Image (cartoon, rainbow, N blue to C red; front, side, top):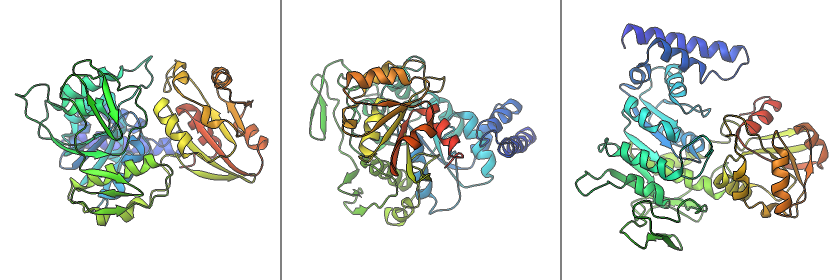
Length: 412
């Protein structure tokens, strides 16, 4: 690297280490921020010479990145932004901290995907899904799909691993015209339970119809492609037709889909599924997500849910046990809590439900409408003492999740 980039890398590592030592965080942002101030091209310098995979989408990025890192690790050391700092500052900090690794797997915020592709020249990009998320400060779903589409057409040599079940992702990967070179696409199918952002075809505006796993536009040729990787029962079918049993320590069917994606991405690096499958089971929690902590006789499990699609999946993962819901509306969450009305809280009926967080009263109104009885508590520790010994499920959006994680000593 140029001398300036070497200095910036050294300073980035030092700043990140000082942040961790001071208890101000894991250093995954500040190190990259300072490094990029010294050398604006530092991310490109750090990426040069590595085989890189980028993982982007509205939901599941952090978990899929962790699983993919485990799978690619068959080949050797892998740099990754394992704590979810998914903007260029986080990528820069992660690569600076990792040193000279031949591989990198980076989670990328969907808004920053074009910028990060330009900087890192990845071998493969995994596109998971697109759904509504923080619409008060983020792009509407169709606009995000258009951003991806216009970016990918400029990089036809990148290998794409894409979700065949999401019409918005399929359209984003489809060339705008027959004259454009089609991308190198590997399709995976993990199922899509949330359909409310893809009833209208982004190509022609006609309706999208569904039957079982299939979907198609009634007005144009856009339809579900045939997947190469497929979740089947408790395993994954690979492109050869071989079935691989997946034994995860992460809950929910959605994580089987994340595992299928990880295997599909790793295959682009030459990793055989049979060699990678056992490594997936080593992932127990992801930056606090799914972590279990014993506190005062309660087995507390943390689930992150930040938008309607992820709340739907969280209800599927949670046991039928006392459940604490926590909602904030700070800057990382988005200030608008109207998305609560896109979530059906009916699955919580019949269990003890507690609520807390900055916007607990907004949540209270939504639960009242959904006829879900609840108890308001002011603090997380009040919820712990309000439930009997045993399981306590905690479902929280981003900053509320981080608040609770901090009270549990930043459990990872």
